[in-house]
Image: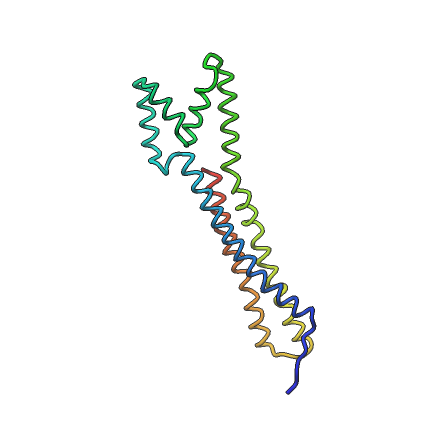
Length: 189
């Protein structure tokens, strides 16, 4: 039997190629976790985790019926974006409309930044995961072509190696597509 000795660089390339799948798996977990976090933050901000529109209808009734004590209690203890905005308005000098406007804009700007934190992660994953996935096949076929060039293997063995290498491309798209869709949905909201 002839013993084939693989050069060290081919073994290293094979391991790097396989580690790309692990990296993509970790990125997919990060992507899903980021999507869940963004979804939770948006639901909390608009109050939909606590009845959303019902809360706004109840608050509108408090204002229409001039139940200011209940309105202030809701504003001071609520954790939605609407309650926070009302809290900022109540804590600002009511005689100066421009000061109220600046305070509300500042609060909403800070909240928007907080809500958009995860969007950068999703955008980055959505745009870069396919390239990481393409790096796998590039590295995966190097040893196969090296073996073919050295006449150490047959074409059928090369096809198996190439098909295994393409798994990384598919997995890269599997990570990227949901990240891009989630980015677009959360950006719109």
